[in-house]
Image (tube, rainbow, N blue to C red; front, side, top):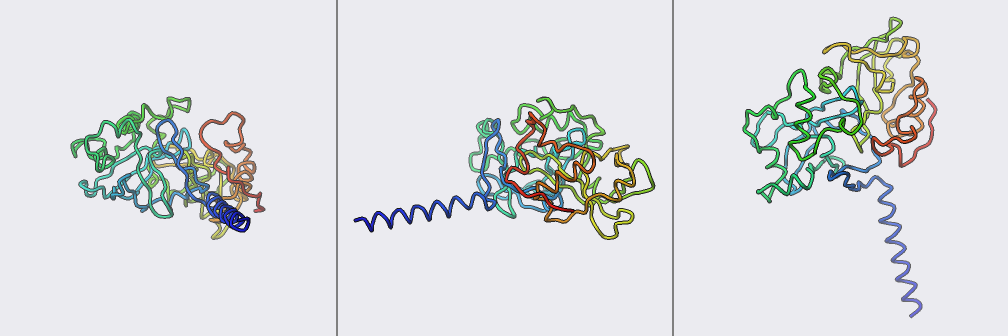
Length: 304
């Protein structure tokens, strides 16, 4: 009898270790925030990694793939995810709020619109696809206007069951010049405000929990050869519809920390980058309520 009890206890402990450890190995958990499912994984994305990823509805049916991102410069975040190849739409693009996207595994995502939006849908087999296709094909919701009007972004949020855009909850109210597409940023040459030093935008990293953009990754920095460097996204300024500048000196940019893809998930690295440029990491500010700490899973400080 005692042997049987000990055996059962060992099995229980083994299961706890097995399934408990998976939570720390990057398994994605679901958290419902204000009726919207948001990912709570430990990853930070590089924006380039998101492009081309498959997106399914909650019924498991294919909804499209991620083809672009709409950036809000005023709040340093991804406001919308743009889907292409949506069944029934061909090459047209459909934008949805970033917070409606949930990661399933390494290569697929699920769209989860708020419960109240789904409750009003008659098509129970695939309510997410129905919501995407509920308007006439010539609706302005099925194209990306240029320039991107904040009222259009707000309408996207309301259309998919979110009461209003995030900026009505205390964030900065963006203007038309604050919104632009990822494809309008990547590859763009940016100039330091002082000194004859320029760079080219290579990528940026995103906090998976709320779409906040953490770091801007630059290439072709004078004097740095083939090395990538990282700067806080907040130093980027949009001078005009096609022109971006960096609010740093040329000397500071030329000596910026080198960036390697493995650095994306290191808390110490990101915090050192921010402090190198005289900024406090936003997730360490007392009373920060914009989302979860993007480095909540830990990570040791790293040397450059």
